[in-house]
Length: 113
Image (cartoon, rainbow, N blue to C red; front, top):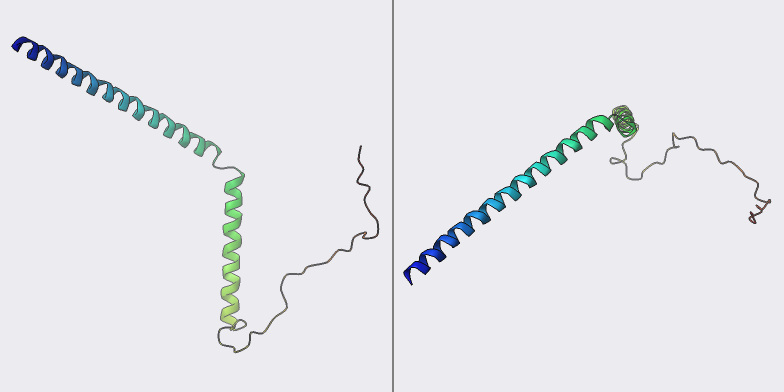
């Protein structure tokens, strides 16, 4: 009976060692996968990060700076003091919009074959 307890104990210890070894191998492969994925992402980011999206972002930031500068100048000139007035005064918009009249009487032939 004593020998069976020793055999069960040794087999249990070997099973635990094997389990820990396989968990370590799994974690190691997972870590390698994460590192490879991060490297591929960084390469993609550096290779294609200088494209159209970055140019659009730079154009947006430039327009935002100009707009902020223009608004700051208008506030400094005293032209916009709506928070001090009782009634807000509507000014003519700086944007010039043009309405283009189309051919309203003519209907399109929607039967396209």
